[in-house]
Length: 187
Image 1: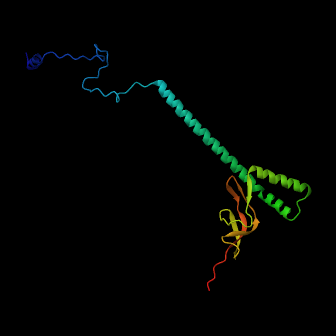
Image 2: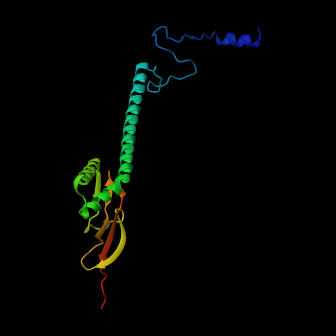
């Protein structure tokens, strides 16, 4: 016998069971050399129904968000188109207002003018800018300025052209004359 055979004979025969299931308990075995992981860290077989349900819920949420975004974009586009159309009609509305001021809005022209004004009002066009309003540079365009003892803050004293807004956006600023409080005179 050689040396290797003597070492094996002194140690005895080593038998390794490579079965994946324990024959006594039927439980799965871990391969030798690996330690068994705790149950929480073990990979559980994936449930295809749960995976498909999660995918379906995710797709439904994405579609709902898409639908909301499309509706919001559609509303914004509609408002932009109406706003641009109303902006193109402002000179006609101004002419009707001037005709009314000069007493020339009579007969069939009066009916057409009133119908047009009612239509643009129904669409949401709102005029602004009257004498006595507090001056707001985001809503008014000042073309004249003076001082007055009759006002305590910057005030519109004359309106040369009314302003218009639609859906909270200024389509055209009102053109006004502004009066500020008179400066205090020092004796």
